[in-house]
Image 1 (cartoon, rainbow, N blue to C red):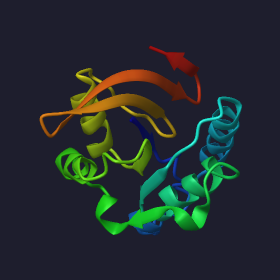
Image 2: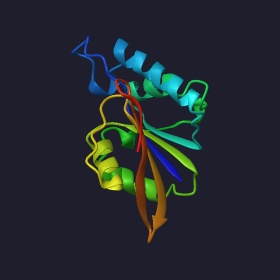
Image 3: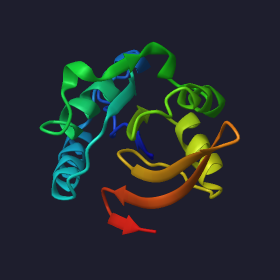
Image 4: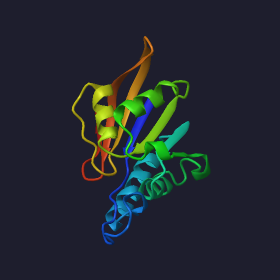
Length: 159
């Protein structure tokens, strides 16, 4: 099974009165999301299931990144993913091991903490960073290896 973890793209701070949950993407965030979409299409990456935070910035990130890759109306937007802890996300994933390819879209610090824990590496996801882990289930626990990483500035980095 492949697990993909995507931190939402850069959010806009143009209006400081906007509630954090409702913050949209910045121009840079939109551009980086389009770059990631092009990368995913070029590598023919697909997902069996997508789970995302229901915040505005994660919804917009999903709509741009997954355009032409995964149907928007099939994404599971979950309120509990908004600033979810690594422990919460890990427990959530324990029940989802039947899918071949799962994408989780969310926020730090929980997302980076989980990726670091699963990969046994110190990984900090910046905005619009995508990491691919290959996993197997061992004794009811996820065991993962870092497969590759994508960053808007550095591009594709294979492990």
